[in-house]
Amino acid sequence: MAATQQPTGNPVFDYKAGFRTTAQSIQRILLLSGALHIAAGIVARFVTFENESLEQALRYAPVLGLALIVGSGVWGYRWRSQLRADFQREFSTVR
Image (cartoon, rainbow, N blue to C red; front, top):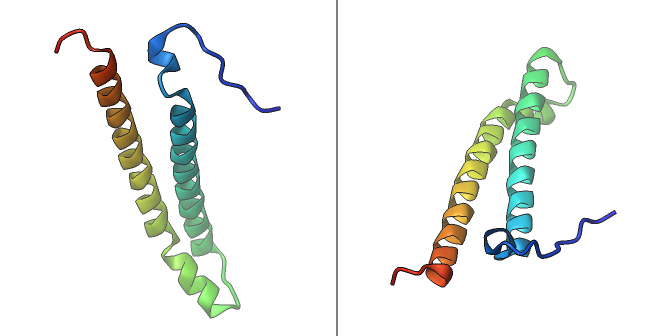
């Protein structure tokens, strides 16, 4: 069942609610895929594979996972800062 965005009456929560939901989903996907890559890399250290190319690819999985987690943090900081600045520009009483 999909959650629907209903206005709360509070402009802070209602401002670009669809964008906020999408941005949070992207951030969550980046974070979870990064954690999955790190876990796959850790498991690959303890398992031997017959396929040499798979073993070589999994050797770099933790590095990719760390990059995805850092990307998640950067994305989160960026979209929240942009949303805050847009909200302040639109609703600020000090001009």
